Structure formats: structure tokens, C-alpha cells
Image (cartoon, rainbow, N blue to C red; front, top):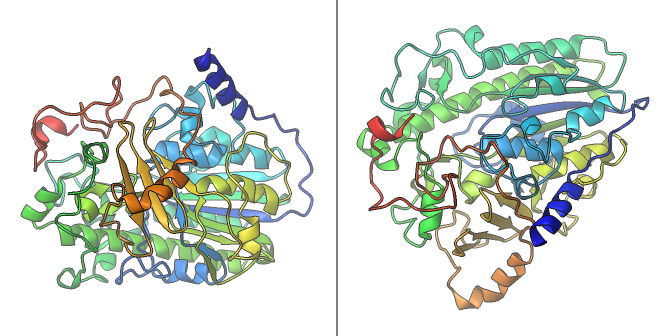
Length: 493
């Protein structure tokens, strides 16, 4: 009976009413810019002292910069589905790289953010990576991915034995070979085109997702001998529960020890900075085109990413964790008539963008959205939020981020707690400190009450077989000691 009741609740949450087309009238346009796997290594966020992102920085000068924004899942597919449907992963059962949006019973009939705009008289145009894999049909006009993560050299530049995505270095020779360059050109062309309807224009960049390739000129901006490594401690994982260790393992990412022994850490950091600078230049082309267009005064601009990214912090590479580096996302919102050049430190989630755009564009409300509009914070960045940001990675694994604390609970009952006022890098786990018992209780009250079972078709291709993140059955751990190096010949696909 309890299972039936929970299923009923879950279905109720996801029952979106079908919109009837309405006249868009004089509503604002929306420019929706997504950057794949971008952490806070942006100048205006201060995540890395050598970051060069003048264009994102100038967008921040006309935006509300959310400094405590978080994804709802630290991996591409569930994060993007959550944003674009307004539903938490724990309510949909989509926790991993599969299933796709329309393959899941809970979301197959969901009205997405893109559809909602189309149903209200907007012209919806998209290109690149907005949805994880599918999504072409969600837009009235979808221009394609222009080559996606390509092009790639015939032989890896630095990591020839790993998954082909995990490589970095200067490539290709010409900037016009880069898909993100083509995406920017297409978006610029849309801004030069006369539109008789308000538009929802989405551009999804692929860098700095691996492989970390960009032309040489972008690497030249970051001399290897001058590269600074992120803040880290060699014993950082000593107070992390075994489940936390195991959940964050990735079968395709390199082991941190391998990166050290093969002198790749600085090279990878250099490549990430180079790719981010390259994408920033593409963002700049789009911002220039908008400023020179007829739409400059009546367009909402949102820049977001699907999750953060570890580059050696907590001895991890990639996303796939419930720690700050993996869940924190840059989020810039520029809207006519709203605050500009200010920061908001309240906890917010990507899931809040759907109701926010409904408010800003005066669209009909959608039932079942689990986020909350950022309208109050766009008007007054100091307005207090009543909700934390919630990130989920697998059933019953959650992070609760409030203004000052991060609380993590795993499916086996183990916990982590970090006080960001004194420990912004999350070096000291306070979960076993009795002085913080009341803080843990307060955060536990925010844990999702619904934890849907994994949706049929779920798969987690990045997980180590037999790990806590392996979804073949109940979470379990590998037998024997955890290896310092990952045997590429047996474990990497």
C-alpha cells in the first residue's frame, strides 16, 4: 500500500497540464546559454586565479550573479532533465545517464521548459547541447550539434590508454574546426534575423567537457610552468565515509595517482582553463551580437552549466560527487528591469529556472514544478530564500546546501557535514561532532520525502562495476582493497 501511495504522489508531482497556445504579445525574449561541465573557474567567481573570462565577467556586470547555485544531479542527463522539467531526480527516478526524458514513464508526457514557451506563442530555436542526448524535437527549430565533442586526433595527445574522451592538449589547428565556434556563429545569425514572435533561443556549448581540446592560441594564454593547482590536501578523504569514496569513483576518469605519476595534473588544469577561455570568447560573440541587435533591451540572458567539475580536488577527476566542487554551478541571470552587477549568496538550484522564467515572461503556471522562482532575488539579491539547494546522485544519496552548510547523507546512513564559513574547501567533515547534531537535524528535515526507484532503462556507464554507484541491484561495494591506480586494460570501456 505504501508503495502505491508513493507512486501516486510521484505521478501527481509529474502531472503537468497541457498548455493551450496563447498570444505572446510583447513579452521578453530569452537567450539561454549552457556551458557543459563548467565549474566556478570564471573570473567573476574567483574559482581559479588564472581564469580568463572577460565576456562572462561583463555579462555578470549586467546580471545577478548567484554565488551559491547548485545542480540537482552531478551528472549531465539527470541535471538537464531536472532543469528542463522542473522536477527533482528523486521524484522522476532519473538519477544517471539513462533513461532519456521521453523513455521514462514519469516524464514521457512532461511539458518541458522549451515546450512551455512554444505553447505561449514563442518561437523556440536551439542548437548544441541543451538536453543531454535527445531534445531536437523539443524545439520548433533545432540546428544540430555541429560536431559535438569533435574533432579528435587519430591518436590521443596525453592519455592514449583511457576512454577517448579523457584527453587534453592543443587541437585542432584552426578555430573554424571547433563545433562551439559554429554554434556561436549560428546563434549570432539568429540575433541578426528579424523575428515576428518573441523567441526562446538556446545555445549549448560543449567545452570545457572532455576531451579538453582547443587551438594552440588558447593554450598559449596559460604557460604550463605558471599553472597554479587548485587548493587540495593529500589526506582530504580520510574523514569521508567509504560510501562517499565509492560513489564518486568513475570508471572512465583517470585515477589521481596516475595523474601525479605521469605529470598530467598541470597539463589538465591548463587545458581546462584554455577550453574555458575559448568558450568565453564564443559567449562574447553572442553578447556582441545581442547588444548590436534590435533585441538588446528586451531580452533575458541566462548563462548556466549542468554541474561542476573536479580537477584533482578530493583526489577526483570529473563530476559525479555530492561535494561542493561537483554541485556548484555558475548562474548569471540578466533581465530587463532587474538588479544588475550584484551577487546573491542565497542557496538556489537550476530547478528554480523554470518557475523564474514563467514569472519573468508572464507565462501560465505549470503544476508540479518543484523549484521556486528567483524573482525576489532578482529584485533584491539580499532577499532570504526559504529553501535549500538539493542535489541527488543515485537513490537515497542527497546533499543539502544551505547558506552556510553542506550536509550529505548516503544510502547506507553515513553522513558528511561542512561549515563553509570556516571551511570553503570542505576539508573537515563535522558529521561526527556532537556540537553540530542540531545542524544535522535541521538539514535532515529538508531531505526529499519521495525517493523514486530507478526508472526502467537506468544505466550509469561511468560507474565502476560493483561500486556503490553501480545500479545493477542494490548499492554495494567492490571486494578487496581500493586500488591506487585504475587498471585501464580491464576497467575502462
